[in-house]
Image (cartoon, rainbow, N blue to C red):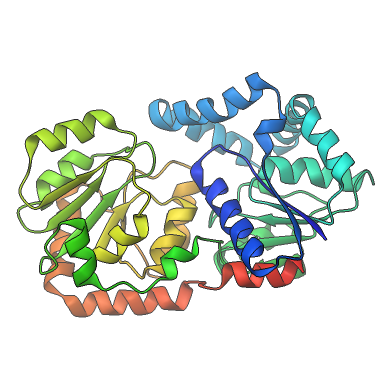
Length: 363
């Protein structure tokens, strides 16, 4: 059986989900003929540049413009126009991908981004491919671009997501709440004392992990300044090199500064609480690690919908300012029973077997 696992490199969450699926199937289903593909590698260079760099620019420097674009394409009144226009643009710029789908005609297509899902669904409707199409929605909310007739199954993170799909007219039988795929390293058992020694931090201190994705967006320095006298703070600056150098030079007490990291699971295991952006992949990892979470710097649209979904389960807060963040963190520090209660709520929502359950659907 030939299985194509496809994503688009616009935002890391789509890629991380696809890689998790690929790795799990490669290890546990060696009989499958697997291919992992970035859909944008089979589009023209300008389209790929605009898709990746354009997204980065908008969420980093033109948030209001991104929010307007999200609302415009989500608006039911404008959808016939926005969807038709998007289909034309995507088709013109993705001819290599379309021909790849037709030539390969895999038995199963597992897509973690709406672009290849849409193109594959259209080809199915035209009877040009016969693949089973599984779309893994990598956020907890649902933008209409995710929905394409011809999709055989939608795999979603929560009942909240399923309800939104059904409200949009998707048959409930075509939606499975399996959770978002994630790297199995987040399921490892960690000895916190040993781990803190490895990281060079004090295992006796109440520890806060502060990270906001690959761009290092948001008021990281201000939050660090507010917390470091009362807590141990692990700050992940990622691609924000200016902030990384500045915090290193300041050498604040109880602060450990990181650039890009590949051991997110270790930092999460060392912390009692995380302050982060509400990206779909990050939320999934936070839930698996059972971390109380404070959301900041949400990208308008998909990430604010993620916050709405989690708040319905009593998970995560979104403070209005840094003073509120500090009050909440100190409240958790002084009330360990509250942390235990939050972890119990998280256990009721987390989906630790997402890859295994998705694999059973593929087979």
